[in-house]
Image (cartoon, rainbow, N blue to C red; front, side, top):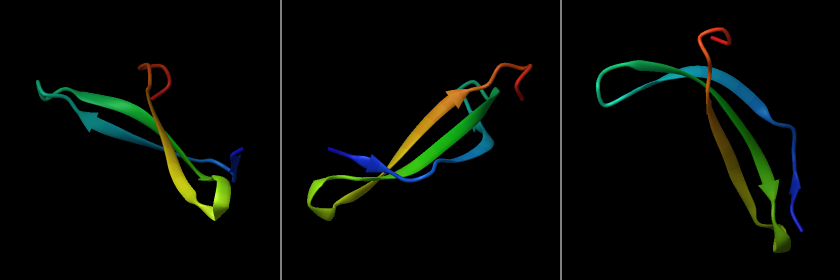
Length: 52
């Protein structure tokens, strides 16, 4: 079983191969796995032009 702490969210940009800038939301959280192990989970979500 895994437990997680509160998520953090930031907005940033990623540069595509063609030079185009893609606005992103990056969410991360620390997840505690069994036996005291912890990992950081990150989710990168592209934003629509309306969201950015």
